[in-house]
Structures are given as C-alpha cells and as structure tokens.
Length: 299
Ligand code: 13P
Image (cartoon, rainbow, N blue to C red; front, side, top):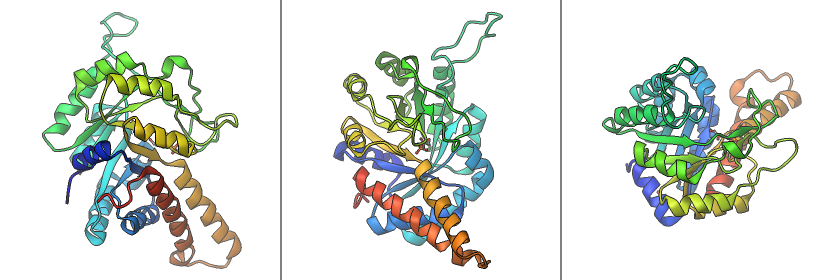
C-alpha cells in the first residue's frame, strides 16, 4: 500500500484534498472507512487531545490496522493538535502515520531568557525537534503558523475569536517552513473550529491565501472544515490545500442520529441495533466530503 507522503504529492499535483475525519468511537471509524471503501478514496483518521485520551493511542492504531487490512483501503492516522513534543512523541511511538504539532500559541522564534518569559522555546525550535524525531521513523509532520478560532457552540470547550493578528502572515509561514521542513503546513485564513461564530458562516480569506501560496509552493492543511462553504473549499484546494479536517459535522451527525434512535425506540437496549443508523449517518457525511474534496477514485 502506498504511504501518506505519496498521497499528499498526488493530491497537490492533481488538485484534490484528503479528508482528515476525527473520531472518538469505533462506530464513527466504521462509518468513515466504509465511505472510503465505497468511493475508493484515501482517508485520514484524526484524534484530538481529548479523543486520543478517550480512545487510547494504541487502540486507535489497532483500529486503523484492522480496517486497513479488512477493507484494503489506504487509511492513515494523524494526531490532531499535539501541544508539546512529549504528546507528539507518544503518538509517533504508538504507530501514528502523522502528527500535527500545534505550537501556534508560542512565539515563532525563541524568547530571550529574561525574567518575564524565562527563555521560552518558540514554535520553530520545537517543530524542528518533532521533525527530526518523526522523520527517521517515517512519520509525517504537520506544522501550524497562525491561530484558528473556535466557535461559541460548546462543541469545543473554549470559545476563541480570531482577529487579524492571529491570521497567518505570509512571511512568517515562509520562514517557519524553511527552518522546520515540516511536510505540510496548516494556515489560519479565517477558518475556525466548529460551525458558526455568532451566527456567521466562516468565509476564507482567499486573497491572503493566494498571497501565501504565491510565496510558498507547498502542501497546505485547512482546519475547521465543518460548515465552510463548498466554493471556498474548492478555491482552497486550488491554492494547494491537500488535507481538510472535519470534526463537528461528524459529531453532529452521529449524536443527532443516536438521540433520535433512543427517543423513537425507548425500549431498545441492544447497541448493535440502535448504533447502525448513527454509523450510516456518519458514512453519508463522509461520502459527501470525499466527493467535495475530489479524493474519490484516487487510490
Ligand atoms: P471542525 O470541527 O470545524 O470540522 O474542525 C476540525 C478540525 O480542524 C480538527 O483539527
């Protein structure tokens, strides 16, 4: 089976994106992989910090292995937003295919050893350490420059509104990429985690993204894919996005369907009966995203 690097290169050349679909239950994984099989598409399973803790890193690796073998489709596993070298190292050691190091809250470069910030290591320094640990183990690294917002829906724990200063600055992205040599780079161009901030649909700053992609011809990652307009998604892929992360829409599809099952069949106690419909709903969403991202028949 071809590796993830091969698929990122193919995606960049042929202008499509691979979905990273986050999960916290085996049922969600089943829906995701079934969709990939039906549409002949590579997929990336993602676990955030909370999801990793709940599922367990070795358990996530075991699920990937078992379903990759059973369905014979390229299923990969990415650690979403590892906030420290130790967190990403744990995922690499467990057998993840890729890790996202999220140093976006750190200064780009190290801060001097002054009392106020005690020589804090910057995003670049830790990213370099992650890359050197990951590379010779054959694991890919995603870096981040700029911060993403988080919506007010309570799906994510904290709300964070984005202002201009948190968007990716083209020059900083260039410096970061040149110094760290990460495999793919996540950018902040108005995208945010969740579906809606104060009732507004997320719109991508495509002018900024064009500026970044003119400066840097590399594979990019778009976080916060839920609720983003199809037209913005297609333009982002055109400017070099090869991976798009989706979480909220999967959580909503799964949870709403499960609630409905339990409400309409209050006496049902057999999990394999009331969980089939939520699996189908997840599969439906993933199939829509695979088609939108253009990764159908790209195996
Ligand atoms: P959404 O929840 O907005 O789809 O974002 C997912 C994500 O970016 C995970 O890193």
